[in-house]
Image (tube, rainbow, N blue to C red; front, side, top):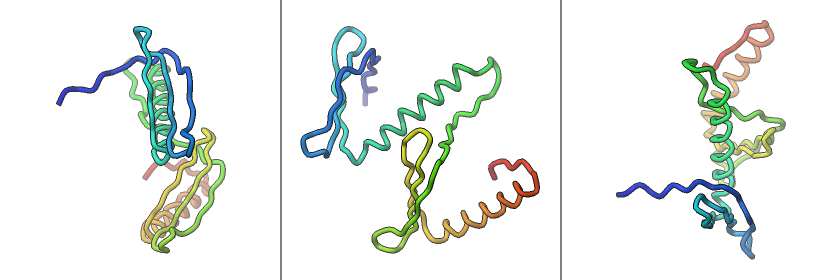
Length: 137
């Protein structure tokens, strides 16, 4: 299978949603004075948005890095608020975080993972209370 074509977007010229709201469409100028149309089903828009924002944050980290220095190629989201609930079938715990990037992050986790998360968060809060500087574990 051949590699897909790569387009250098030079300007986004138009964006809109479909009449029914089930999809979005973006028109962009690309190198060589032509245009491409990107269309995404609404259900995939948050993932597309997250991918673009995260790739841009990683690119910014690379631009600011010092030569021969390791950089962290992960961009954590800073949560501002959180909501929780249960899935429609009552089998999972659902978490919705509002972020400083205005991209909501929604997680659906098993009860077992929810309990493990609570235990780990409690442990990290205890470490913070003792003045330790925790790292990811």
